[in-house]
Amino acid sequence: MAIEIDVEDVEIISPGDDLALVPERHPQYDLFVCDVADAVLKDIMPQLEHPFYSLSKKPETTIREYRHNDQWIRVVPSVKGLATIYDKDILIYCISQVMAAMRRGEPVSRRISISIRDLLIFTNRGTSGKDYDALVDALERIKGTVISTNIVTGDEEQTDTFGLIEKSSVRRKHGLDGRIISCEVELSKWVFNAIKSNEVLTLHRDYFRLRKPLERRIYELGRKHCGKQKSWRVSVGMLWKKSGSKSPEKRFRQMVKDVAASNHLPDYEIHYDQKSDMVNYVNRGTMNAATTSAEPWNGPVSPDVYEGIRERAPGWDPYMIEQEWRNWLGDLDTNPRNPDAHLLKFASTWFDNRGKPA
Picture 1 (cartoon, one colour):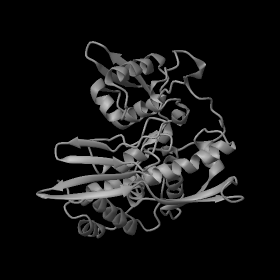
Picture 2 (cartoon, helix red, strand yellow; picture 1 turned 30 degrees about the horizontal axis):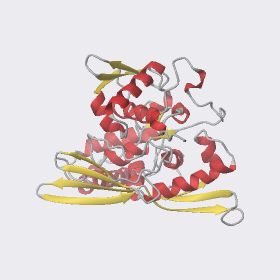
Picture 3 (tube, rainbow, N blue to C red; picture 1 turned 120 degrees about the vertical axis):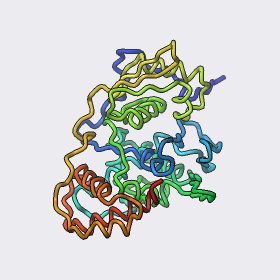
Picture 4 (cartoon, rainbow, N blue to C red; picture 1 turned 45 degrees about the horizontal axis):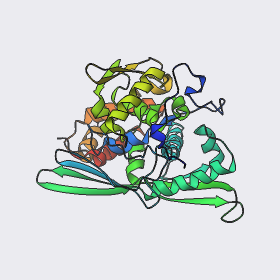
């Protein structure tokens, strides 16, 4: 009788094993990786992050909920299951394309044309027929996953519901069974606005070489919460909750110990303290220039622009918004043709995403 094992429960490769990471299949390909999970949730629940991607390769069709005080977030999968952490590779690729176009000063839109072969190479996957077909299933799971959250303001509650992508279209060479040539993806407004506001994180290129979903998730949480700090401590219970793991907490604790022993995550070392039952992330100091903020843009703006910022972002300090805009331009290495108009548009987007300051 065959025994079905969830991908989460497969034993981590032992320390020093050359197979701890997936081989780099396309070493010549240059990656710029942005984390959409942080981009989507940052504006919704600023201090919290909910794991809305499945860590299992088996279809997960149960509704997920996260509650904190008066705020909640609900993730509803389709009949084909919740989007997986591997499905998210498609969104990472799309965001990277948009960010690269913005750096070049090109116009961007929510609708993105994708070369399937480029996507497979970008995400360190194979390029056989089954790899092409797997992307179609991934697109369907992403499209079917719906996120709802409430935003409480005073005595009023607003509920927003959105998807990660609005729609997708796939071109095949010969009908339904033909080889996929290309596809188009239309990102949701929530995701696209986060990109335009530069609410993204850069991931290490070895992210796509991590073999297990939980390893990816543990790395993501380090990137989100530790960032460029020297270290970050979190209890096993909180890490378990944030990870979205469906394994029992006892089993999760052992898997964290295995990750710590293997010591192959990019950017961070992981240490488990048995006495305190805490996990300590230690920055390896390996983040390259792509993860380091550039110098802010230092071009001039008109003195009259500050009144326009006040009109477009009421309640916000116009000089603070200007500095955020300058930092954003520096990160994107962009030189705006019309700085005043560009800054005012930034201020409008800033207010649309955040509303009035608390």
